[in-house]
Amino acid sequence: MLKALEKDPERRYASVHALAEDTRRFLNNEPIAARPPSALYQLRKFAQRNRALVGGLVAAFASVLIGLSVATYGLVTASTERDPKAKALSAEILARGEAEAISDFLSNMLASADPNRRGRDAPVIDLLDAAAGSAHENFAGRPLVQARLRHVIGATYQRLGAYDQAEPHLRFALDTRTVRLGEQHPDTIDSMHELGALYNEWGRFADAEPLDRRALELNRLVRGNEHERTLNSLHELGLLYSRQGRYHDALPLQEEAHQLCRRLLGELHPTTLSAAGNLGLLYKRLGRYDDALAMYQGTLAARREVLGPEHPDTLVSMNNLAHLYRTLGRLQDSADLHAETLAPAAAEHFRAALAINEAKLPAGHWRTGQSRVGLARAFAMAGSYAEAEPLLLSALDCFNDAARASDRAEAIERLVSLYEAWDVADPGNGFDQKAAEWRELHAVAP
Image (cartoon, rainbow, N blue to C red; front, side, top):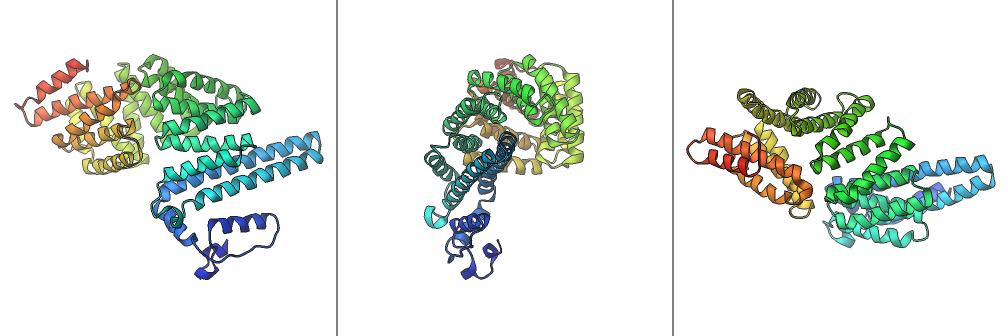
């Protein structure tokens, strides 16, 4: 590794392939072969310029190698118990071959980011497309290895908002693992959960529900009720029901998820606080305002303590509580909380989030709409109502699908609140009438 950090460019590795080859030789106790330098320095600079994206891809595929190592250990152990020598040796040889094949695949994927080959600013999704094609070609005869890789590829496509491209990879991973490992294998359950999450985010709720329900059942059966994967399944199914407006179905799942977060992660863990915030919103949707108030107040206090007053999550909690105060008629409390909120900091965070989503996601994506709602709230806190209004109106265009009914309802509630506040600040210009029209048209409670 020192050679990769050598100050003299003439003594560095030439490429990712050279480094991978020396790594392979080292692991096999072969002589290490140095190579003249070429693109490694530029590749490192590319990675530094695109730290989050390239780092995310590397971490995702590194998880494949870690998972393979765990699986290999289990395979060797099980084989040793049945036949201490021959089967263990066979399993070790097979696993080593798969590990080397995946290592070569990862090296090729990283090398595709070489600026000499793809240009200075190659889009990450192009690199992922190349990796997806290579996975299919290179591992056609190794279905479980291909399933492991394509699971990660599909999940990465999903996080980029490329749902059409994610689906065949996640479906292949699930089908292959179901046939070869069985439905109750942890890898199969993970693929089932991931495909359900894709359909949930995509708005294909009829496809998502049977997968989400079965993944939760299997996680309870195989891993137990007190497991983080079970927690993930509880959250996913609860989220699915909430997005469909099935709040009564979502409630027991969200309550269990919140309690499980507290036991597994602790009261102040960010995931626990997110679960509490989600549960508070659900209580509000169900008209259980006292329960929502207690949850919102506790979440805000904890986020102030753990994250600080300017963290985006803290700002979201402050906005949620202020909005609930307004719903309860506690207008002064709502105004005081708005005044306390650091609107410039909020606008900066939400503007950055909006820029990222607009750059990486398809036009009109619901996450972009959520970012517009967040930025509009920040402008409204600052009294910049004219800047907030078009953001909320354009956000509604991102929530036209029935799958985004809850997001649309929230945006409309924010729009009604905006016009009400605008009328107080600038009376006599028809903003009260706009608030009344939106409230009546969309049945928003005063």
